[in-house]
Image 1 (cartoon, rainbow, N blue to C red):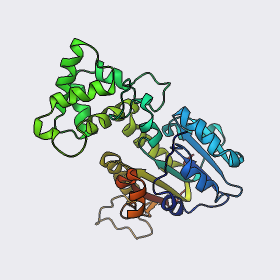
Image 2 (tube, one colour):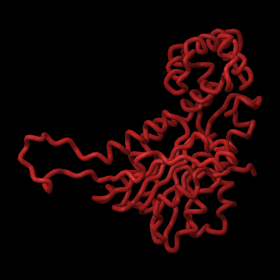
Image 3 (cartoon, rainbow, N blue to C red):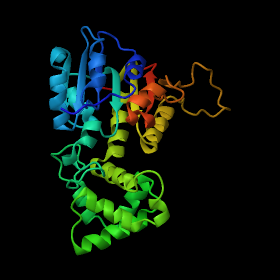
Image 4 (spheres, rainbow, N blue to C red):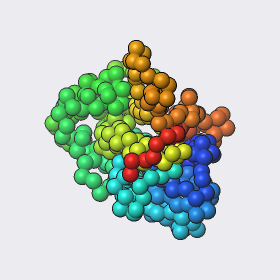
Length: 316
């Protein structure tokens, strides 16, 4: 079993303001680090934990075996949260947490094909039962589509050059492994770019992984469902690891915590004006301290944002 250190663990659970009798959701269970701490604060409450990676669920089942009566594990994407919870008779929840991106065990398992550090077949599927994988993206997507993905999801400056090199190379023979893809990327980049700090394939691998797992689409849908299901006083906490995710969370939270615009000339009293249903708990994102960054390098890019429903019920 591979080691995984949960990022911003104490901060996340503290800011969720856990009620001992509450109903909570972990949208990205991983190896159960955040879940275990949250469950320790429950008495009659219950946690519903989602993960689309079956291996992660199996390992978490072992990690959480001592508290099995207080947790239900669900093999599905958090974008299916409302449907899955309704099946179990849950209409509203008191808290929802998400720790986004790829977990350390996924990155560190060479077989999964997530990392440019290990030779492996191009895969990158979080849910290994789905059809689309990195091999298909790299070997079948047209150049224009590859360019768009690398530009939009990887913020890769040389997206068109890399896409062109991929199409040119795969015409000779399929690009099958992570190292083969790394070599194609290196061929495509200018010499000055290869001399820069950081791995030249990082942005491309991020972009392909996001495409394979539809990470941004899932986040938008999952976030809307999480906020919709919150009971009054319930909170949603989200940890992101790159600017694309953080922008979505930041903008969504801003939208939900803003009162609808009212034409200033309308003769309405303050009581008649519609108020925002949500309140930002974190005006600025919470980031890891020096000690955590030193002990867990993955935490250096982590940002935690939290929002609370202050009026109205969940829409179940």
